[in-house]
Amino acid sequence: SADFFVAGYWLWGLMIEALADIGYDLNSMHMASYDWRLSFADLEIRDRYFTRLRQQIETLVAMNGKKAVVVGHSMGSNVWHYFMQWVTYRVHRNWIHDHIYAEVDISSPLLGLPKAYYSLLTGDNRDFASMGRGFSTVITHLLNHTTRRRLWRSCSSLAMMVPIGGEAVWGVNQTGWPLLRVGGIPQNMTEAYDLLANADSMPDDLRRISSWLLDGVRRASPQHEAHRGVSTSEPPEHVWPNVLAVPLPFAPELQKYSFYGVGVLTDVSAEVLETGDDQSQPRLSLDKGATEHFGFHMGNGDYAVPVRSLGLMCLKGWKDDRRNPARMPCTIREYLDNPTSSGSRTANDRSTVQAAKAAGASPAQIVTALLTGGYSRGGQPSGDHIDILGNEEMLEDVIKVVSGHQVEERIISDIQAIADNWNG
Image (tube, rainbow, N blue to C red; front, top):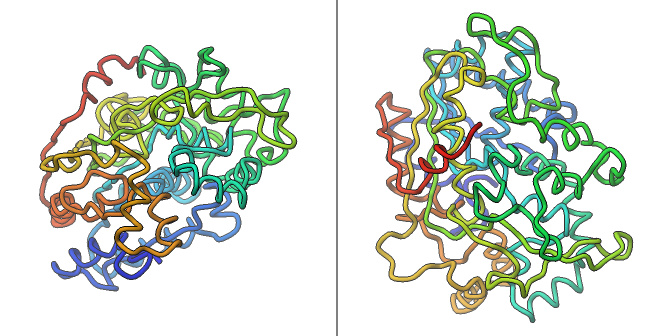
């Protein structure tokens, strides 16, 4: 379900209600759900997802006599970016210009997220690492690290979220920490990529997306020149998920927005040890005692995605004519997490389970709470990766966009300093 995960646990439900309040209904609104386990290319191969999405948008535009507004959350915006490449090169170069009025990316990891990399490499991530000894023992007994890593790798979509941009985005000079340290030794981004997959050692469970891991994820800029605002050649399909390496469609009237939360501790670096043989258990595992955050070094973000991945493309990446030949404007709108609360929900990750138990949650709800970053729903004024979907101010801003009004830029974080320091 996309509106409510379980009774009382909303996802898109509050936004659907807000849109309904201004007249949207089944004839003017479409929920483009997708199988989040698949790689973006497989969405079309297996489900004809992009073909059906194109047809649905064309139908809505024809019925309502106006261009559509696309609102994507989290990986959904990455999927939409891939769709723009697909529809431009497989349908018509003017399709986006002819059918889309605005695009709103909410909590979108456009430059990837470290959490995905750690899950694929070790089978572990912050959500599991912070469970607490008792709960962690039960989970590890049912799903050990090898099984969990196999599970993550079976979801090709997760590899689409591996951090992109190399040292220029994720290096120690940018974040203060390398993406990974093995036994205390910093790894540069090429070394980090190679630990996951390289030409001489490609894990069988990642082989189906080898072109992405060996080439697509490692590119940092378009390799094809544009002529009069239009790319003169088609980038390879395995590069399409990389927003740094492919140009946006030529749609000069389209307005882009990037809405996301800040002020939540988010993992940007990890400490790992070489403990396994990659057969009975993963070769690398989290060194949970290396930091106060279970082996992770923290930065600013929305709990799941660091701020640089949330806002850097909008603030600077798409100012480059090679990536945005039509010079479409992109507006950032940041939402500070719980600005009036006295404490931080991320101060102690273990509080999640205690809060869930105190509220009488079932075991299934506790697991859901852990996987989504918290039990108590934030809503207003939350900047949490998921709870922002209930942030009243953010909902009002979405309503402004779909109603044809402008939303002003608001920057709270240090994203401007990050952009100034990025030579991308």
